[in-house]
Length: 145
View (cartoon, rainbow, N blue to C red):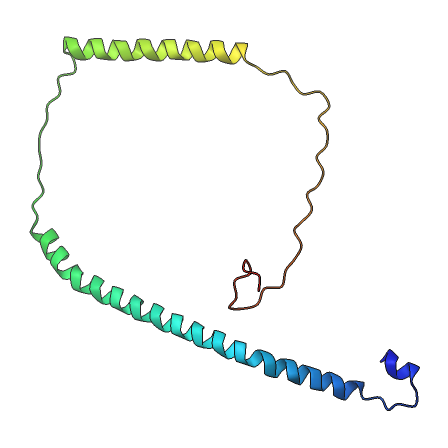
C-alpha cells in the first residue's frame, strides 16, 4: 500500500495482487494437503480393519474360554496351620526383634543427620518458554527440511 502512496501515478492494484498471491499459495499447498488426506484415510482404514479383526477374534475366542470356565470345578483345599509351634514362635520373635532394632537405628540416624536450615535462599529466576515453531501437518517438526 505504501508503494502506491509513494507513486501516485501508478494505479492501485494491491488488492488484486493480494488475491493472486493467496490463490497461488492455495494452489501450491493443495497438493500437500491432498497427500496428507490420503495418508490419513489410509491409516484410518487400516485402524478400522484391525479393530474389526480384533473384535472378531475376541468373539470367536469367547466361546471356548466361556465353555471351559463353565465346566471348571472349584478346587477347595483345607490347610491347617500350627502357629503355636516352637519354630514359629522363635521366627516371630526374631522378626519382632529385628523390627525394633531397625526402628531404633532409623531414629538415631534421623537425629544425627538433620541438615541445617538454609539461610536466605536466593530467589530463582523464572524460566523463559521455548520459542514457538511452525508445525506443518504431516511433517515431523524434528526433521529440518
